[in-house]
Length: 143
Ligand SMILES: [Cu+2]
Image (cartoon, rainbow, N blue to C red):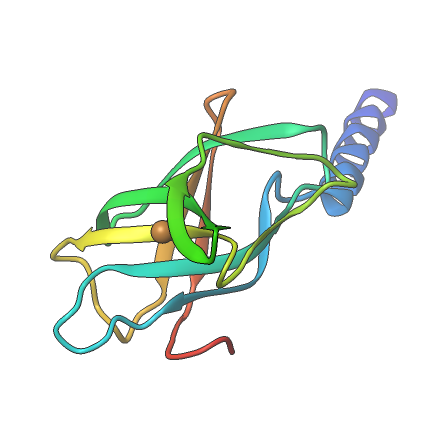
């Protein structure tokens, strides 16, 4: 009986822990811009945060796109250009914002799984090998 309640207590502690921080990476206000007719390349935007230890995001992939790249838009002498961003470090107090005109995910070359009426799955790749799947709705403009 004592042992059993020990197990029950351990389970309770575990679930209390996971309630505080159930997702190592969360995305809110995420969306993918519906590609214009005849176009396939598009961008995804979201606020990324973590509730746990500091983490490093080293890449992204999607079953619906062959290539997913993290970019940022930089304006130099009035000319806007995009460059690749190798990684993002997130901590509890330091989230990241991916938004039009700033950092964004570039989604290139849709696969046969792409369906413009279904959410897009984005898999976040962490430096420690963990992966977190997020689902973002397709929209013509910021929802
Ligand atoms: Cu881009």
